[in-house]
Amino acid sequence: MDAMEAIFTRRSIRKYTKQPVSDEVLKELLEAAMYAPSANKKQPWCFVVINDRKILNEIPKYHTYAQMLKEAPAAILVCCDSDLQSGEFGVQDCSAATQNILLAAHAKGLGAVWIGLYPAGREAAATKNLLNLPEHIIPFSLISIGYPAEQKPQPDRYRADRVHYNQW
Image 1 (cartoon, rainbow, N blue to C red):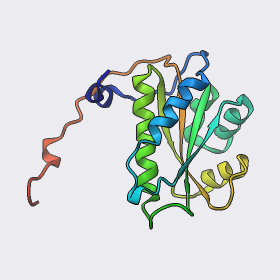
Image 2: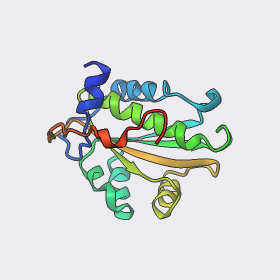
Image 3: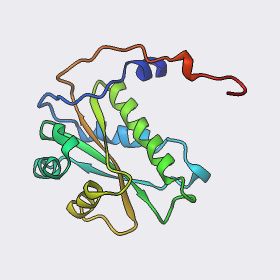
Image 4: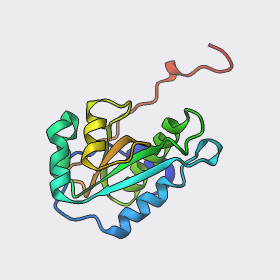
């Protein structure tokens, strides 16, 4: 699958088969994340791979939009190390890493969905507590990952009325 096809056909997948995701595939997704662009090359991201069923089942108890984790065989928590970020650009860096994971998952035949945690709120605090994250580690996004048990069509999202050249 080429890059443009991956971008145009990626969808948020919330239903998964019971097939586990191998450690090798998860490592490839993490490698893809670490190739994201980063302000001043600080690369402030860090990750927590979650494949323990007890933990995956705990998160939906406090995060309304994380119900798909009850079916997902794995998830990746993308975090920002506040000691490493360049100014306030950690959010952008972690967004790029998250998108790379989503695209890489799709290219590998996996389904995935971005579950928001940042800006810090009740869900972020609960996740930080559940996973024993240090103070300087900020939970940014949680990506549910598995082999898809659903397919979604490709919508036409291009909006010419949102494009301006040289000035508004």
